[in-house]
Length: 422
Image (tube, rainbow, N blue to C red; front, side):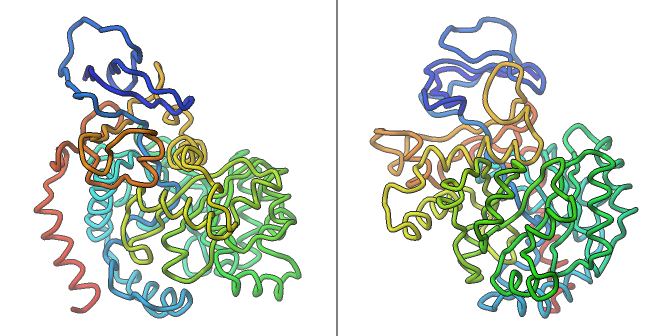
């Protein structure tokens, strides 16, 4: 499909400059960005009416199918929430349920301008099919732990889903240190080194998690993972709230990715990740994730961006901390690179056509002094007019074009009642 977007403001995220002009696609790639009018034959020519085109947001850590537990087990501490509510109900999930709840989550991503997710979950055949059927881009992350999975199974997943569909890829991962015995951790390290592949996990989300690791191994999770040789080929951690200087030094030296999840960490009272301190210690790679709808409960990158900036300002006692463009970069370019999607990071000719049209002609976007600051501090889902993934329009003006929304809602509610017993 060939698309022409004209009369547009374009923020490519290659830099902070705004281009007034056109963006054209050819198939799943961007073929042109610039000020000149592009003639030719297009399947559709879209007058953007002076609105904004940006790269799609990248949800760099989530558990999409956990939409089935949205608002089900709130106002509980993490361990109670996880062990007494989440794990028992997840055990009841079927392939059909994962398929439906994944599509529900993806629909919410589209309304928030999110064009790809970095998803750690189970029943991956159903999950991958749900994404492929919708035309949605996703990166699967391994989730082995003491409750399920084997290192051999992770290797099979790695090979299967990295050749499954152009929209689907896979990164090595495990759930967390506190849920995964040493034998498995050592096996995952060997697997990472065998394939020269990055490795990802939940890392230092809570103080009790870090304290427990010190009790078991006399070191933090990050220090344990580094000692085991897990980070020889990159990767990173989700949350990274309770980092000390040694942890930051390892992430800096190994060029690892820190994925912050501010809404989830705030709601579960896990803490505020020290992003500004991490930057002072030399860390450069940052991305943003929503986490799952069971702990967030809203899969909204606008809210995550505002909280990322706002919480750092409070933590630093400095209103200048964590400026808006840096946060916008984390939510777009940073997320793509963390997920291994180097062809989806910015808007440029030859890059994948994963983009969002933002409605600037609404009160919360006016006046326009600084577009990046408007997006981070004032933006909301109401401003997302169109979400394009791989050159195909999946969402436009409140309509989902590759899935029957009413049918998904109907099936999701039925399955949620069956699983949760309501």
